[in-house]
Length: 301
Image (tube, rainbow, N blue to C red; front, side, top):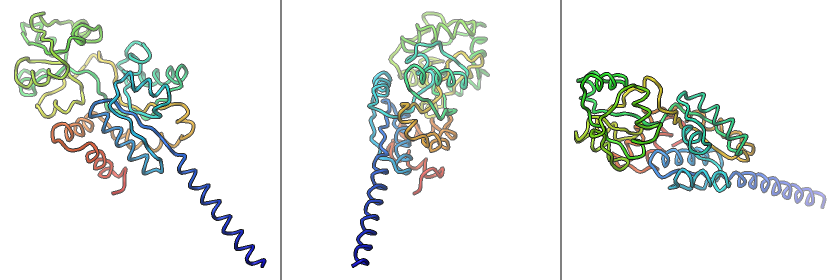
């Protein structure tokens, strides 16, 4: 009888321990948010895959604008997302833009945590900031590799046309600021305003000689364009980093360590290549994200 009771006790104990272990795993739930463009879809998918590989249950919420995603994070409808330091400082916090990567990150990190309970971690080298582009062939032919070179060319009877959207053409941290910082000017009739994104095609089709763009856009590679060096560091840092609620950070402090290998790998060239595979080669986001993680030893096959 005693043996039966002892066996029964052991079974009960095992059942309780198993149940406790299972509930702990089930409690590891995270909602990952993303904006509505390819790079964000890729970052969110890689994040979800890595979290799932570490025992988390993940809910993905994508296709949000910057303001909607930020509000969702503040309201704790989203626990974690990849965002950009420049967006955080200028758009969310109303601070002046900062060009230096680490300074921008540290300033954002301090203010956002103190004022809003948003914690920033895992700063990456990938910087999706504004860029001034040329066709590579013309850039090499004229020896223009930086915005200072462009300024010298324009100040010595250059007559380049410039493609831009209306916002960049008029905002102080856009074209007016570039011209003031580098001491040159495009003639008004040479500034061609168009919808966001159309300037890549305008440059490719030789409708203009220069254009604004975003530094990690896949079309730069696909259309054989080149980013001119911002040698006076005018454009703010828009480096990618993880933003999460302070509750998420306190509950799962291991997240920062989980994503360290990924953030260490993410530079502009890597993100441009990943964007290229989706936007130009028309591979699925899921396929590109998983292949990248597997190939770099961040996820088992």
